Image (tube, rainbow, N blue to C red):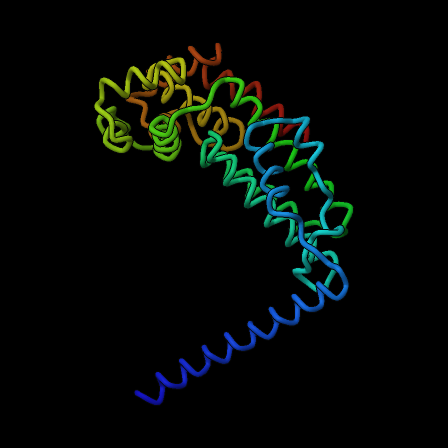
Length: 262
């Protein structure tokens, strides 16, 4: 047993030593060939411009991947800029969450653009995904900032609602998560979001129902049950309030039309 432990620590020391050697070599070669990374302040300035939805500033600070100032993450040129784009998207995602974007929205956008990056077969396609991702995140943040930033308790509630559309959501549960009293949370939510908590939950459930009606063949009653509506009739009533259509009318208008186009 002691020998096994010694072998593990010996291997770790060897790995650390190799890493130190690689680091020393990289620093020497970068200095020798005058290769530098992007200044930290400029990099953070770019992410901050995306976070605040400052479209003009983002365009000014935007820098194509793989040029001077970018490190080498792979010996393969295509894989190298793919890795850089994945890192860029990861940073943008977290900055946007801090800026007020719904967490699930941000992470889903991140997944979409990283998958697009993975499918790219040449550098031009990677650069196109890079431009589109930056433009998309910045535009969404611009809209969020125009509406006004949400406070941390409200962001916690929005994320909790998004993650639990298929579960029962109570004011007390939201208040407990946000560390506020239920009455105060209700007032704060209405002030910042512009509607009551129950109205917001209904709106988000209807949006989820729209997607299910468009892209799945689940029945109306199955969707109503999944999204925690008390009954099919209540689901139809709420859905029509937001969309001016019944779920059946909505599916006939959008689901069949989309399949007809394929």
